[in-house]
Length: 92
Image (cartoon, rainbow, N blue to C red; front, side):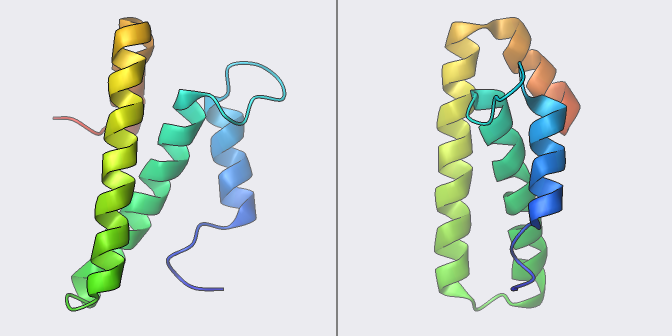
């Protein structure tokens, strides 16, 4: 397994912590939490491998996807959006 991937156990832990109801694995909150974990892993990788251009492109794609999900969450429910920012410590 590559070091840039999150483990199955870590992913289940994130899903359990951010799901809205039992069986929820696709809500915006869960998707943002999993993407944030992957982004953090890949950011560490990019610090040690600055010339990994394919990795950088993947990182930018994940950041864009997370941004779109957060924008959607902001329009649907501002309280859920602010809660996600606070819990994931994405913003200052």
